[in-house]
Length: 308
Image 1 (cartoon, rainbow, N blue to C red):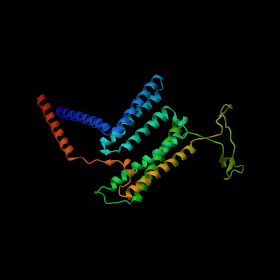
Image 2: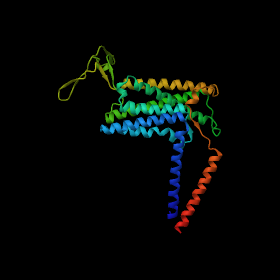
Image 3: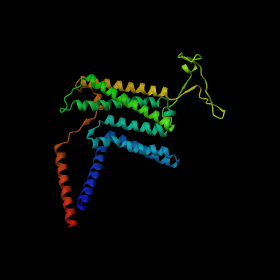
Image 4: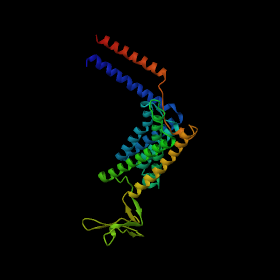
């Protein structure tokens, strides 16, 4: 590659980055409601970030930085993939990110607030079904494709997509807990258990133990450590099944909404608020792109003349 070609490529990349930043800024301000929510959440995250740094809680500071990046994802998706997210959907996604990372992880809402994790998993099932439904309905409406799905199968695919996302997330939590001992699958306190491991005949008869008030751990050195939790400590399975159950509920709710939306040929008021739309590139944009490309070529020509 010659020096001129390298210079031209560098200028082109610089122009593309500048154009992308301008498009991101424009997209952020396009919808007033979602921009207000984005601005408020960003200010709150920055305030929490400063506080965590002052407290020397660098793990929480990392979650804050991650949240700041995630807040830009909806706008990035809209600009990069040319997909328009309805304001209700965008606001819901932004609030979900803030609730999961800042409130849930940094402020320990998963532990302090009852059913916080359950609420987020229900919402996750709803949003994942919306994404799955949108992907299929966009393909279903594409004239270049030959298949056409009925409203029932559109809803079924959305439901299956949501449940798949939920299962993959539970796999991730299980992996993190068993490899890095993070306890993402929050433990549950039970007062009744049923297990075949206590069968005196070593068979498959389940022995039920009721009224458990405490568990005492016997360590390798022979010392004992009462947990004092008021019951048996279940290691994640109850939490996992509860998460999948509420994910199921959220998926069913949106799948039903999507089914009604397609069945009534778009007359539903709820579904359009959560279904992204693919933007067609206007002819004016194509002309502008051609003009900018021409300007870039002229700029490259100017560089070549200067080099000469």
